[in-house]
Length: 572
Image (tube, rainbow, N blue to C red; front, side, top):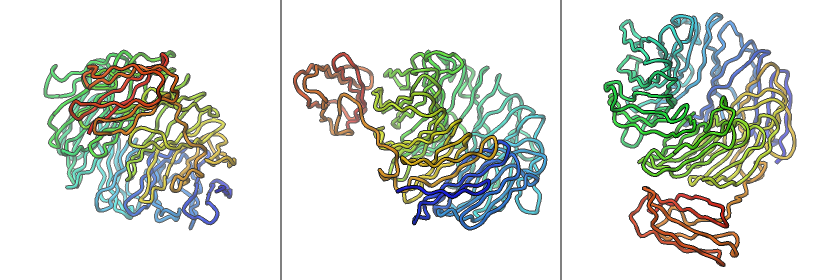
């Protein structure tokens, strides 16, 4: 169906004709604006956080308003799935600045916001005042709890004279609140009149802090070393342990109660860690992803005890291709490297941290994954900034090549086996990035982000260009519906030389070659790398294989006419 747009002065609003549940909204000031987080609650209501650089007009389906920068640069609003505004709040004041980069809900629908603030910030959007003042000349960390109607319940701030900020929030059923983040130097993590000072080992360190349901301090856990170390995401696994992922440089201590036994050593400029704690803040284990190349992690998710990571592979400052990075934290080595200066990746791990599959977006120039989300039917959606010619990989196999315009944004749907289903591309004359993704109960996909320059927001063949008012504007859209083929600009074609099915299986599976004239060597390895099957085939396009060993993860290596490809197989 063709998308039809109407233009307002500083606001653009889109609806599919005859369908009020498909829309686009863009707004901005003459300064730089940011969209931080978009989330959909259990009632399919959309909550968005961001910041505006100056006063701006925002128009919804049922109303229009003008922000007042004197009330604060931070914005948070709730709208229904048809783009009708429910409420709108501003946070900050005329002096301070706030970045609301994290959001979560509890089971009662209360909204938790976290991030960083600078100077004097009023976190109460009502006529009352609840002021926090940062330490020194840099930002402090904050976490605030708001009612479903947007009223402030409590706010807590903590930090020191240097940079401190929160990267992730985790809400426990009992309403305890966990936050992760980064701090530098000496910081007080107790937001009350009491103090609990922690000093970083060297440069920036990572932390996990636990607060009660009313924001009282319970504990803080520190990781790091002399380099730049951070915790990007914290989650619960099925055992209700805390799983934390992040990156570190050089030597980093993962257990503050020991001096050497729980240290990690990076092989490249930075490596990734997977850390587990219990809810009392006690160390359980740590594993590393790394090698001679540089690797980082941006975000992570756990779904049914399965861990997903997105991040970067490569170092743009080096200006060359990246060395190998072993993405399997356990004994089997599974190396990947970047095509250019920096690639992006999406990786899936089993509950024992064995790598199941890894998808990669590569090319000559920097590729960067911004956000991803797992829907209620185990579909994965991820957004990626792409530049120049970009190559999509599925487990090392090239499946498609994309030639974008300048800096574009790719949004893709992937099934639980890592197979690309569909994708769409937003093209811009300067840049566009989808910074936050979520889905509702009907599998509609919502996205928010920032665009600069003339940008085409129509995912079909027709062009629908929008131009920002200032240096960079915000967009929020519900544009994919049920992700039917007609709402995507094209479907991904699998260019692999073979197919493997079924997967998972009971041990018996088929490798199907595209060309029966090909010569192929097929090897099956267990998790330790031991070869359990090695066969040569020719003049056939279908090979039946059987794994007689125990259930678990296995690796199939297929060498077709000198071209080697890999696949992961799960025997149930």
